[in-house]
Amino acid sequence: MNYGFSKYLLLRDEIDEKCKSLWRIHAKHMKCKSGCASCCQSFKVLPVEFDYIQQQLNGRKIETNPSPGPKECKFLIDNKCSIYEFRPIICRTHGYPLVRLNEELEEYEVSYCHL
Image 1 (cartoon, rainbow, N blue to C red):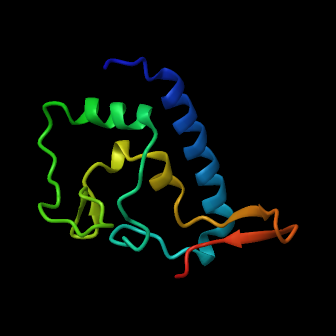
Image 2: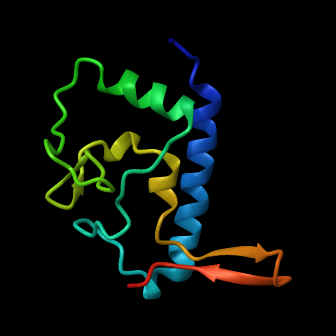
């Protein structure tokens, strides 16, 4: 299936800009860097992301993990992402502190990387 990816790429670029802003604010508390793969798991992605990644992989030689565990990302090779430049949104936002409302307790919770 061939989609126009312009809206997806605009959203992804906007998310990247927000993440850069969060990085500037929280950098002293962040342990994420090249080689850190603590958050890298096999995630479900949006259909548009799947199609975009598939399009980007078409004809490229990308190394994949030949035998990932049940929750391991097949694109994680030696703790580095082999599709980093076109990784999904969930991978772009991992590690940053996120605030969400726990409606049951009627209070906010902060989710963040355990490192």
